[in-house]
Amino acid sequence: MADDLLIPITADVDVVTARQRGRDLAAEAGFSSGDQTVIAAAISEIARNILMYAKRGEIALSLVANGDRQGVVVVARDQGPGIRDVPRAMQDGYSTSGGLGLGLPGARRLMDDFDVTSDAGKGTTVTMKKWRRMNA
Amino acid sequence: MEVPILKQGHYLIASIQSALTDADLSQLREALIERVGRFRARGVIVDVTALDVMDSFAVRTLRDIAHMARLRGAETVIVGIQPEVAFAMVQLGLTLKGVSTALDLEEGLAFLNVQTQVRIDRGPGRLDRG
Amino acid sequence: MATKGKEAQSPLPDPQAQTESTAALLRELVAHLRQNRTQLREEWARRITRAQLLTAMTEEEIFAEATSVYDNYVEALETGTFEALQAYARNLSERIIPRGVETHEVVGIVLLLRDVLARSLFGKYHEDFDKLNRILDAYEPAANRIANTVAVGFVQERERIIRQQQEAIRELSTPVLQVRERLLILPIIGVIDPQRARQLTEQLLRAIRTNRAKVVVIDITGVAAMDSNVANHLVQTVEASRLLGATVIVTGLSPEIAQTLVTIGVDLSEMATVGDLQGGIEEAERLLGYKVLPLEDLTPKA
Ligand SMILES: Nc1ncnc2c1ncn2[C@@H]1O[C@H](COP(=O)(O)OP(=O)(O)OP(=O)(O)O)[C@@H](O)[C@H]1O
Ligand SMILES: [Mg+2]
View 1 (tube, each protein chain N blue to C red):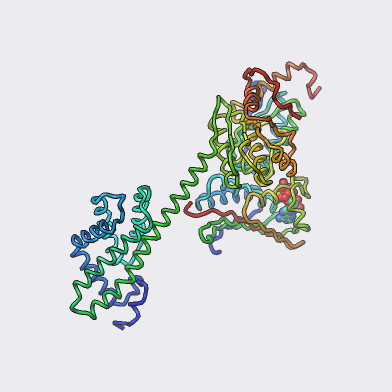
View 2: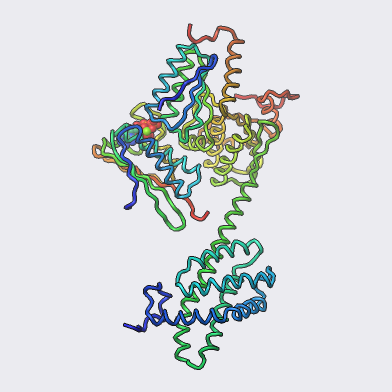
């Protein structure tokens, strides 16, 4: 994926930038404005998690095609503390920071594909995709 | 970006103009709560028409504003949530439970007028600060 | 390096890669088709009519389209690029599909053109059999690819139109009705799959905004069954409507659907439900501040 859009996440403005770039990319790829909003909201959640739990990291945005489907791919990477119990973090209401505990499970509901890999002490990578039928 | 807060009669109106960072949102919360006390406001309207996304932090902040304003005697109404934003919010699991909502500024004002009227009718028994 | 024996089999290589002989043969072919344009075009149009293809079109229309296809065809042969032909095929399909032209007709006319042109080549080169062979070898792969381009363009366009129509039918099957100012009714009938549920919600939310609705009655009397996915969606619709400032009343909830809602953890006391549509409308009017006559059959809340 050579033409990834890389957005470093080190401050709260970057969360806004990341979700706006995500929306722009989705719009460019022909996603409906409803889907653009959904993608932007999911990016906002995982970008904020980077900032909150890992302090810094990055978000890569790209487009993929698969048969007659086109997808927006969002990869969020950090080298923070990692998530000790991923299945638990994916549950509604689980939060170690007094939050709503809706970021990860909510983003999963918003997107079509969702994957978290995390190593305690090494960092976290969240990969998520939203698909759209082409020529529709 | 600082959100302008207008005082109109007994009401405070915060109209968000563009995308907000978490710091902007926290700042809005502080400013509103401080002003509710200072002006003894009866109602607060937060106009979010310009927001194209509402995530968990934004929702949590709006909920905090409503709860803290209520403790200080003001009713809060969130106006202008866009259809797509609302749909994304509920899919995420965000619902603004316990916070009033209205279609736009006009509706929000009408809602507050009814709300505060009801309270005056009920007499002073429900004053939260005393 | 002048001639290689491979070019005849290759499926029309791009112009740069063509060996000189194929290129020269195609040039000669193109010149022939240009010279005999009037006559070949007429012959083709005649054969189309005789084969009873494109019966939905008049003879003038057929001739006009035949001319355009012919010219695009020759151009594709000449340049080896298919973009213009592709665009034309799509445009043509867009025009003729609404008139009921079928896939077999489109494939039929392209094959007829191939045949008309091949016959004319026989006529011209029948004395030089060797040359005829080489010309046909150069012509055939190109002609096949052209036929393919046109047919695929047609089928794709047809699929696109069908999808569009399905979309339109779906829109129609879930009308949002405004019964009076600020009151919308959404009667849902039939089977709801996740896709339809989603569309329904988007439609309703937009309608709330444009009609400035304050109360919405969603009537699900006509919904036979609801799996937990769709039930979840109903709850989301109710919540999203509230975020826009509208109150939702659900009517016609069958005991089975009520059970499904409870099973997925919905607190039914938090959802305004009224037995039937009539009762729902009365409740809505009460909320809107209208005077309604008897109130006795409104289900009390909580
Ligand atoms: N990038 C990350 N690095 C380390 N831990 C993380 C990361 N992302 C999430 N977590 C952990 O997973 C938990 C759940 O995350 P989630 O985003 O669902 O909820 P939250 O951030 O606590 O609250 P909310 O997002 O609703 O405000 C977090 O509380 C945190 O412990
Ligand atoms: Mg989070």
